Every structure is written in C-alpha cells, then in structure tokens.
Image 1 (cartoon, rainbow, N blue to C red):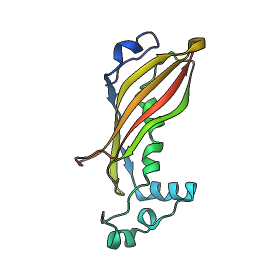
Image 2 (image 1 turned 120 degrees about the horizontal axis):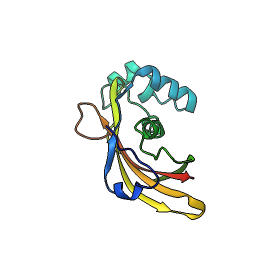
Image 3 (image 1 turned 90 degrees about the horizontal axis):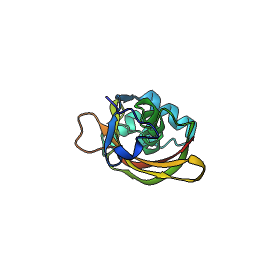
Length: 153
C-alpha cells in the first residue's frame, strides 16, 4: 500500500518509504526487445546458450539500463508522485549503482523512498526518489538510484 502524496504534504514524507511496487518479470523476450531497441546486442544478454556456457552468471542477464528504464513506470505505478501535480518531468539522476545482475526469468520490483522535496520558482518542486530495485529471492538489489523529478503546478 502506498502513501497518498500531495504537493501540500510532501514535506511530511521526506526520508520515508513511500511504498513497494508490484513485481515485473524480466523474461528473455523483454531483454531481446530492449537489445534491438537500443542496439546493445552483447552476447551476455541475447545469446542464451553461450551465456549458459560462458557467463559467470550461468544465464543471460538483463541490461542494467533495461532495469533502470523501469523506474519511471514504477514511480507512476505506485504512485510516488503527488496526484495534484500539474505535470511531472524527468530531471535526471543523482546516483545510479548497478549492484547485482538480473538473470533472464527473474522478477524485480522497486522500494521507493522520498529523499527530498525542494521548492523552486513558479510553484515548481524538485523531488528526489531513492529506488532500490529488488530481485525476487536474491540477497542483493539489482540497482540503487536517485531519480530526480520536477513537479509543475
């Protein structure tokens, strides 16, 4: 269950976990589609048999950028932004760390914490969300990132 954020109550939730998203399956078809879309066709991602034989992970793994690209989806799926924001713009990242590989067939989800909410001019607010992307049944997260979003009135 997530918190009902509004622009008026953002400050109350700084430093708190906003919620945990649903699981998403990272199947080989998704990895292959991402490889085609980004032109990143390294064998460790798309050559299943070679990855089983030669990869230190014993299976193909998702692109780190594929996992990172799910953060906006999770941010709105939860939602981890105020419902009364006029618009939400991607402002970038402060930190991104790829901690553990996501093997093909794994499921991932994000645990989201509100780090900051900084008022800006013209009623805008810059928020920083910490995403910790967990891999089901794995001790280490796939990645940790601080996503920056600009909220417009």
